[in-house]
Each structure stands twice: as C-alpha cells, then as structure tokens.
Length: 462
Image 1 (cartoon, helix red, strand yellow):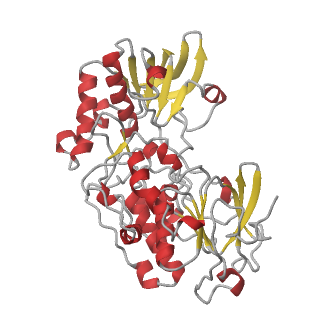
Image 2: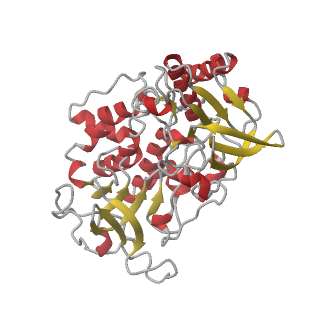
Image 3: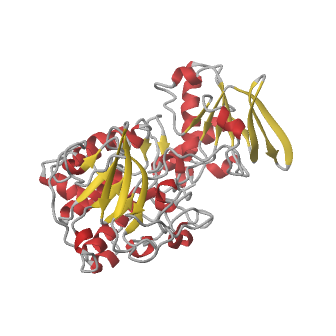
C-alpha cells in the first residue's frame, strides 16, 4: 500500500498547503498538526467542511464518487419536500455569500440535481474548500495508528489513519479527528420482510431496482408495458407508483402492483389535504386517487418471505392477512424498503451503536420510528453523537441508522455542534440552533417527477 504522509501533497485530486491546527491542550503536538478528516461529499459532509473552514481548522474531505454529491445525482430527478430555506447550511451560506453566490428562492423545492448544481458544487469550488477535497477516494478502513480495537494504552493520543482506494492506487491519510458523513444511500434493505438478504433475491439484481428510478425519463423502456411490483409503504414507494401511473397513460399495458406491510393502503396516504406541508399532502391524495381508480393493485398487509425466479418471472412468496400467498408473473421490481448503515469501514474503532435501529446509541430513543416521525425528533448535537472512540463522530443519515426520520437540516445542526466542540468552543457546542416547523421537513415531488426524504430511500415521516 502506498502511504501518503503529507496529506495535502501533490498526487491527490486537488492541491493544497500544509496548515497548523490549533486545538485544545488535550491533543498531543503530533496530532494537533493534523487535519480533521470528513468522509463523504454530500450536504452534511460539505457543511462540516464549511464550518471547519470558517473556524480556520484544517481538514480533508474524502468522497468515493467522481463528483461532489455523487449519491444525490443518482436520484437527481427527485424533487424534495423541503424548500431551499431548509437545505442550505448557515456556515456554507456565509462562505457562498462572500463569493457573490445568489441564494435560490427560499420557498422553491429543488430537485436532487438542482441541489448539487446550485448549492453543493458552488460550495465545493470555493477556495476555502476546493483544495482539500479528494474525489474518487473510497474509504476502506479507519483505524488508530498502529493500534487495534483491543488496545487501550495511548489510544487517545494516536492519530487516525484512513485507508483509501483511488482507482487502482491505495493511499493512507492521517487525521486528528474523523467525521463519518457517508450516509446510508447505496446500502438498501432487501425486499424480504425479515430484513435478511437471501441468495435468490441477490441473484435477481438485474430485475430489481433498489431506490428511485427515473421511470418517466431514462428508465422508461425498462418499465413500459411490464408487470411491475413496487415494494414499500413510504414516500419513495409512492413516488415510484405515481411515476408508473404516468407511464401507464402512454403505455396502457403497464401493470402496477403495490406490495407493503402496512395494514391498509389508507395508512400510507398521510394527511392528504389536511397535511401542514401541502406538497406532502398532495402526494397522498394522488396515490389515493390511483388506487381508487384501480390503476394500482394493492397487496397489503403482505410480508415477503422469499423472492425467487420462476417460469413466469419473479415470484414473491409471503403471508397476507395471516395466510400463505404468492404473487407471480412479475417482470420488474422496485424496492423502497429503506436503507441501513455500512459499518465495515469502522470495524477497528470503538463505537456505541444501538442494536435495533443501528443508530448512534444515545440517539436511539430520540429517533425511534416506532415512536417518532421526522417532526417530533428533538434537536441534538455533539454530546449525543459522542463515541467511545474519542474524536470520532458519525453524523448525518448514518447517525440515524435504519430510522427514516432524518432531516438534512438536522445533519447541519449536528456538524455545527461537533465542530464547535472540536474547536474548543464548548458553549456553542452545547447550544441548540435548529429551527424547524413542527411538521418536519421531508421531501416530495410536485411536478410528477419523484419524491423522497433528504435521504431518499429512507422515506422519512412515514
């Protein structure tokens, strides 16, 4: 493995200069000269970069994709529920405003692509941030230098080492602290209701789309005049159903099946016209109408026990209302059953993760989707996100694990607090500055494109 000792030296995707980090006296001289490493170039990761830049703390940002916001661009056709006023981090806005950036209309709802093009990309191009962004750097592992998980002595004084893969080249970076903002997108839950990946489902990956396909755009021919099963009862699944309904207008042989675990389809409609967020209410009203018009056939409550191939196509074996049932003859499936975090890169760090939610342990009772929606999760910061591994933080959607109640604005508040703490500003770290409407701010599609949460597959506020 090629080791890069000078983390801002030539040979990276960007250029930079060495700078000195001033931190609390707890840090050794060796670690205090190292940057903070941010993993993930999405909205929360870039917000962390903006806060570090404003405080004069050196950092590097490692993004696995070829572009900033690479994951978001995979659902670039999706329009958010949350208007621009909730999608821009305060520190990022300050830096952008100083460069002459024009803030999009506060009440407009951006698509994923617009979020990247009009906000994330301009932010990443700022001179305070661009030199320290490393694209195409997939993180393989994060460890303490020369210390495995078992060893305690001298652990907190040892720097972090981040091992990455850049095409065919391997590099390592040292850091004083690590902020994991990798999210959960790209690590979907299976269709099987028990939550396990069975070989039969894995073998059908070319006929199953996990996420939010561009049904009325580039994926049109894949789904036109096919028998399609959409699995899931949240906003992402409803989005797919609405787009399939639109597709059916031009391709009338398209057959739409809706498979979910909810007791009744009505449970997925939400507040409709009574919803405090008009866009979200419209989503429920539109799917309600499609079902009433019998353009969508509903199977609920249906708990999938296996997904396999048969002579007639994909076959779903499960239980419906307590009886064994089979749905077969399916040509394509769209699975929107949420996502889960990938902890493989932090296996050698000491972490406190709640078992059921797979969230940061202290957050679990605050975000449990069995109790909370995204409108009832109270603000939280560094104290709740603190890990047994000192100076390591999981933030953003990944901090919520499998819970679908995460909001982008919540992630911004998380990193504001964490970076205030890292800088030694304890008063700012303890202060809560998040201001959201009581209903929460999820995402939707007003223009017959798509809808989702800030982390689309999570379907927040279900």
